[in-house]
Image (cartoon, rainbow, N blue to C red; front, side, top):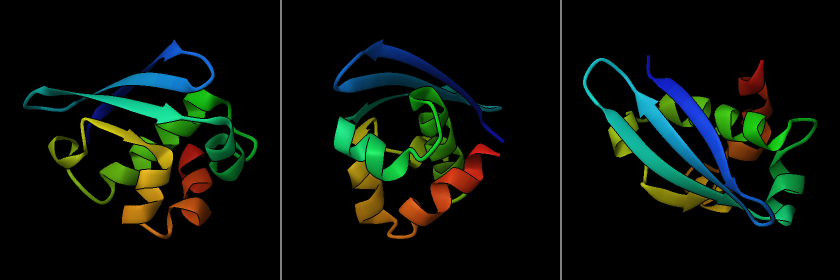
Length: 92
């Protein structure tokens, strides 16, 4: 299982630097999120928690190396239509 470290680097729109690491090497990702995306996907989660839950969701479906280096949360939904309904479950 990959380790996920999330660092907020910008506010409104939010930008996060995410490092995923496992046994092999670390992978770096930049994730952006605007207010509409936060309201759609965030629920009761804090922004950093939403990004952590998003990566847990993604890592159940692909390897850290296969996750795009730069993406927004709406792009996750385009690739995985179940994302909006499932992401909050990954925060638990």
